[in-house]
Image 1 (cartoon, rainbow, N blue to C red):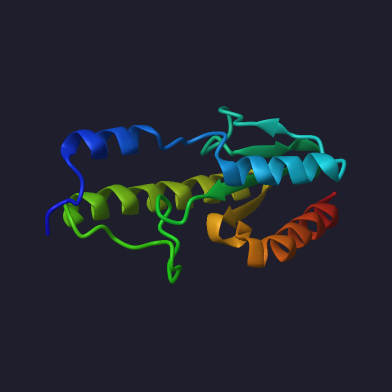
Image 2: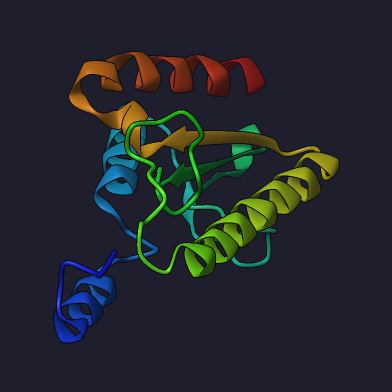
Length: 140
């Protein structure tokens, strides 16, 4: 199956995808800040450069995109139909790296919280963010 976009259009679309300061990440940050939590962003001396680090709670938060981090059984993750082998390799390497980073953080006694993009959709957002507060307060 051929790509539905011309190479220039696909290239532009891919160049617009951000790894930091994504809308889901900003949503979580605003929620935390409005609830009195203070944090650091993208701490690169921790494995995986967590999106949000709460040193007081010895907790890190990764806000993962369902596609880029292979969220199993999620309607937002679908393996591309073009260049499938290339994408499989790329995406499963991401997942393997995520798993290794989480293990390293846990070995250093960090509480690791992963929030999936789909968990921040309107129908699940309140429950997800409420659970986040509970997780952090239990750690603090």
